[in-house]
Image 1: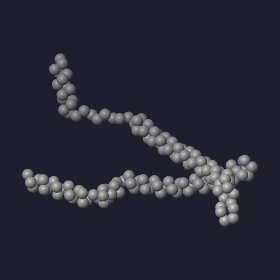
Image 2: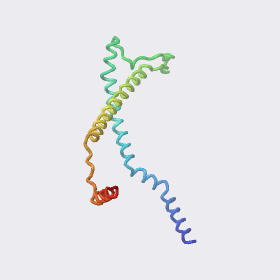
Image 3: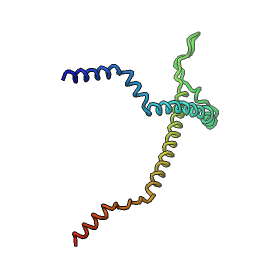
Image 4: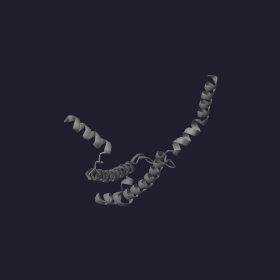
Length: 153
């Protein structure tokens, strides 16, 4: 009895010793963490591409449409600069750029997810369309079926 308690306490002590570092190793070794890290890296690169698209392609076009204005320069000056004190301003033009950036990013992600879902649906439909061949009954099942039929007679 005491030996089993000692063994149990020893296991608990080893588990505690494993503790935080052991749990962290277990967490990191899971595939989901690696997938998530890859997603973050790809997402960061994708964000840079979308930012470039918005700042260098879309916003100049929108600015041209509204008369050559650049949104990033839009601001509401609350207090003008005095001497070495810089001006205090609300830069709502940058906010407009970021909102447009968000909607473009959301649209692109929505489109990618929609395309991936359509591929999955096609794959499921192909699997559903394939005829499922039922395996031939085993000899035992055939024999039991014959016995049942004879008993009915």
